[in-house]
Image (cartoon, rainbow over the protein chains, first blue to last red):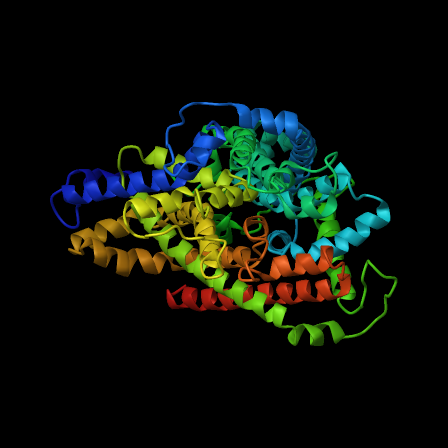
Length: 290
Length: 312
């Protein structure tokens, strides 16, 4: 990286960018930021404006007067916290099991002698490309035979399978990058594979594991179709289903919807911004450098 | 995701001679929990779905018999199916093309060094992290026909005289959905392509500067050809993902108005869970599955040919 950057910084020759090009780049960058963040900022602003202001012909970008009635509405009137609790239970359980199964599998594939590892990885990747609508009907039949409709466990099982390919692939890439000599040294000292994994590789990979966990968490937290099909009451429905059901009889409660969106998205957005460097390198196999 | 890895692994994946003196359970045992969970929720259901598609199962009545390919014949003469099929293809093509092009532009901008680049990259993760259901509702509010801020802004700058009923009118509904999808997915596409751009060796840039290439020639003759495999892989994943779009349509329009946004996933879902026609719905799902495989194969063949051209 360094060499090209070095001579890019001393402008004159070749295709060095003149200053108006810099201006253009900054304008584009500004546009990208506004485009990415703008809609959500508007959603945040909407969530604290009274309905009267929302329905007025000229919208106010900066909320005035500020009200928290929408937040009161969703928690007191619509028991939104129950969806949140369901989502938290399902998502955290999924993430935990997913990391456990996925990291062990990734470790075995990356650092142990497994024949046909490319085939197995390809299979895992291929499965993640299945159209999910193709498995929803048969799974529904199975779940109703087992009496698993309207339970947390059917959602956890499905999200586990949806999250595992991502976890295995990202951690596989990371585990491969750890020098093999570390295992060898441990093995000479008589350590078994599982000991090497839990005592050496896993602690070394903690940032990657946490990031992968976050990816898995987001995937499960955001999933909609299976939750819609497999749960039918507020005791087990998750947040996306809850928000999708926010429709009024006579008008759409945009303020309440915005409040609910902020409640379920803001924590996610904050976490993503904190871990952004790790997430980008996790998703792109470490190819995006600073 | 993990696209950059696919490429790098191919070069590094020479089997290493690690002789682990494993005790009884071989290393394959470690794969069992993961593979079993994946298999239980994918392989078995897919086969069961195939089986269901040959039957006239409905959950509402006790009829259930093997009817061979009847569901498929019925499907091909079903105008609703073709309607949804066309919308799905339109959506997939439009969103994949726009997202790939915009993503490429974003990647090119971010591959330049400028102050605040980290902030831009972080901001780009926001649309990706937001639940799709929230995205749908958010665009529902942004593009609302009465109080939507998009209408207000367009009116303020004089582009439209009267409010447009974006997703409430058959003419604009599908376009609104494409816009929402482009918003949500383009930044991520940009990051994937940025990853691809950054794997291009710096020495090539230096060489083209020495040879007196301008920025455009440098892009067209050096970066684009080298980026082509990444572009193809990324747009393939995007197309496969766009083809199965469900959340956005289901929440924003429910397939309406007048079926103008009905796509294959929402149509299948309705057959399954509103009409409870599990046999017929499974035939629809199977057709979707086959189409996905066709898309993947077409991209795969194209990719192989490109890679051979580049002189592998």
